[in-house]
Image (cartoon, rainbow, N blue to C red; front, side):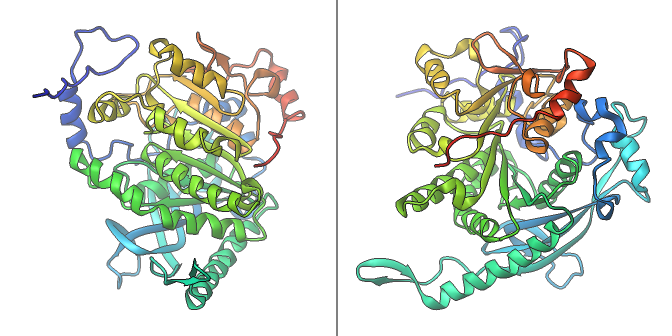
Length: 461
């Protein structure tokens, strides 16, 4: 009879072997309302925004200079209080994908100038609260699964179902085009949340990211049926992450089909990384089978995985092995050895190495050589910043990591000081972010880099 392995200690680069053990971590995970964090107050100002001050918001279109962040959402959660004027979504599944508009409110009775001043400050004397001002469902895609029949031995969607899908795509595209009309960027950022997040969590985080990225283009919060919490909630969310794939594929197709969209960037966190990469992998296989370029068809720009809850060997087989890493314009992975939420997942899956919790100094030669082999197409970033107890939401809670997102998603910078994105290297050759990032060597480097920003140019797949 085999015994259950003992839970591992809480992981920290500085922790001794006599530290707290995972039973405490498990208990806190069960009791904590949200492992991935529930953003009640405005996230810390990214270091790079604090360095630039209020000028960081100088290019925001006048129509977007408001204390609200108007975002779009798509969700396959069940709808609550259908007769209420404000529609919210729960933790159960819906067989149809809803979409609409959400207004994330910054503070109470705040004007734009006050919001900019607070947003550009590295220290705020008082927290700035966030909330949802309104949620408006604009439409739905057809119920899934759609009707499928056989034609000459091949499965095909029925003409009636295809017409319904086309109509839903057209209506969604009209809403998206309307939001994109505020500037000429044509950029869409799709945010896919992780384990134990609510619909509200997804919208609030997406709104903050869009705000600090300069309010350019449109952000879409994709919210799948997560949020029960606890260890059983993890298994619930994992299976809901499988359920949602068909709907996320519907959304990505609809975004790409909108003529006004020039580039789709995707930021996926935690279990959302599995959701996003699975959907993209399936779309890639479908598109490649038609001898088309997936990047061109999906208009795929940057793919960012933050604290990805993914088994490293599965990444090798299903992402790298099937060429998905070659599809986006750039592919970035943020990981941290101090991510205790990923440490819990490691324990639950009997010690499988997970992409979001890599500890470079402990990797086997085989795994390390595998990462180094693909580092020309995947930017691996070792996050070494104060991350709090769980250490899982650093992509927006850390001013250093959020700064790198500004430089990547907001300004399309390649890694390296010569490109105005001064990442360093760790002891094994991965890129490294510390708490003081970004540090520019001279006062003029940042300004000079702004005039010489390189775009990622790789032949599309």
